[in-house]
Length: 92
View 1 (cartoon, rainbow, N blue to C red):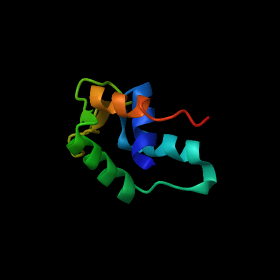
View 2 (cartoon, rainbow, N blue to C red; view 1 turned 90 degrees about the horizontal axis):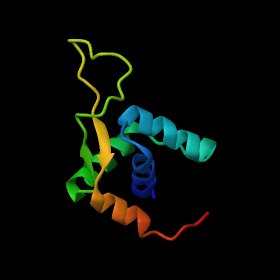
View 3 (tube, helix red, strand yellow; view 1 turned 135 degrees about the vertical axis):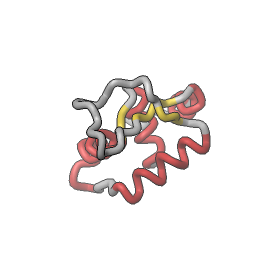
View 4 (cartoon, one colour; view 1 turned 120 degrees about the horizontal axis):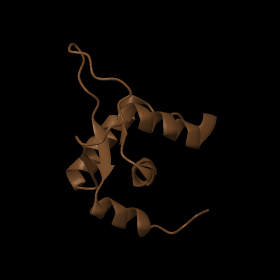
């Protein structure tokens, strides 16, 4: 379920991990919180499967990265990921 939720959000636009966690929390409300300990392994699994890629061209950072901090990794859905999302039944 977490994988499909991430892919659905990335279908809207590229996002970095912190933003994904925030949007997932908004979607799920107080029912379930998504920890970074479950988010980042899921992102790595989606990358390994070819459903998402790191997008170095996306401009989602609000400020330039400091020299002592790593830049944010921004993720983008791939064609394979889009096919997976669109093959799911609409449960609205």
